Image 1 (cartoon, rainbow, N blue to C red):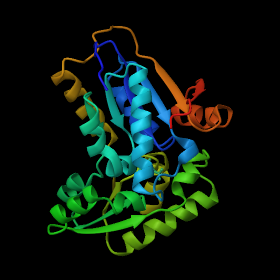
Image 2: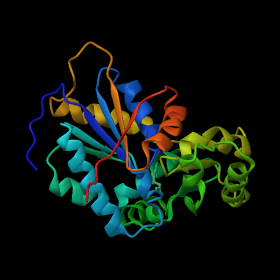
Image 3: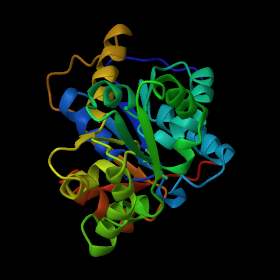
Image 4: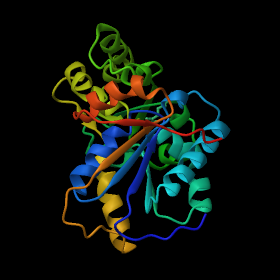
Length: 270
Ligand code: DGL
């Protein structure tokens, strides 16, 4: 798809649902003057247990939508969609595309016990990208992986702190802690919203790593290199779309974004 890219155009960000808002908030912090578009594909969440093909075609359709809204760059704010589709997206679209990677590298550098835990979806842990990451750092440190079915759904429901959510976190975390993991990588963009409870259960000596701030810095670098950083001096704006029912999504997105915002219905894409 051909696009022209004036620097005042917005940045398009998407996720299977509301998890990518944890990346969006870091982008807002890093790039206060940029206009941001966010698509939550919540009608199809979780991506983590869906076939790769389906995630790939949703990702293509969402990027096409964001480009139709004049996005000058794309952030795949979803580890699962990155694993399933980032190569295809980069081959197909000419705008800069920034994506997620579970933060195994900094975790491997920082661990003292030599054991790190990675919390992610089954889709991410089974992806070629993750297998390569595991091969690269698995010789240096013991990498324990843990899929977390059910956690994405809790965040999608805006249920960050109920007994059910805490019980799920405990169930997934305790085996990693029992094996001396001293560093926990949040390999799914939904999980940073649960970070306070993950930290509480893990204890203060365990380091929790969320790569979102690093992704926002990478986005800034990519925009700068492409001459696409906005020169506007006003505060940037945000627009939100969901593939779920907007009146259901609006309260959860507002809760996580900490501002009462408007959410539009994503048009049928495929
Ligand atoms: N937020 C997601 C990720 O980073 C997607 C989780 C899902 O939909 O299963 O992997």
